[in-house]
Image 1 (cartoon, rainbow, N blue to C red):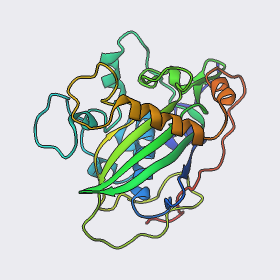
Image 2: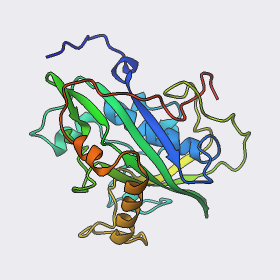
Image 3: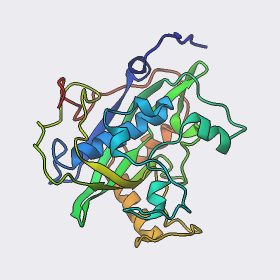
Length: 272
């Protein structure tokens, strides 16, 4: 088994991993609502990978509400289900859900996560996004090789084959009333150097396909059906890189270190 240095930093543990973004025609990845959306999705994932909310990008904990129980009826801007998983679960929370499954201690990740903005629309009170998420090229340490992240506790998600490693996110954002525009957010860095959330706020989200519209779900107050989700997931499958055979191959352990591609569009090498 490879020996992992005990003094590794977060940057060391993620040095072999990158986020790669695309979007539908007409959606600007570098400015406007896409910037806090990118920062939110990447922060959510990094915090999950490190099991540390402080590992998220600057501004995340201010811009993103805390998770709430589905039965919490206090005032909210979005359906209750969009606040149950708006932040990722940490190891101590997962210990309660998966008491018989061990933690992933080394926290080293490899490969690429593919995001595609399927839609980004201005709505009453802010912006609504549907986001494709491809996990099929993401790996973690496993003995002498590398295993898909979808084998980790909390990562499997409800979708089954043939699109197990493709997720759909639904994100609701509140835009700032006013504020100076920031410079286009693209560059050589894998993460932003400053707070790119600015005055944007995440009202709620359903990451990782944890949708209220799945058959058997109770307490939903959102208008879309499970058929809508399945339609969006098929659109994601059509748009994400690589074909089904390549994606299915990504569901198996490998012995060689996964290839990492440059971050796209990346972040500037100076603070926003």
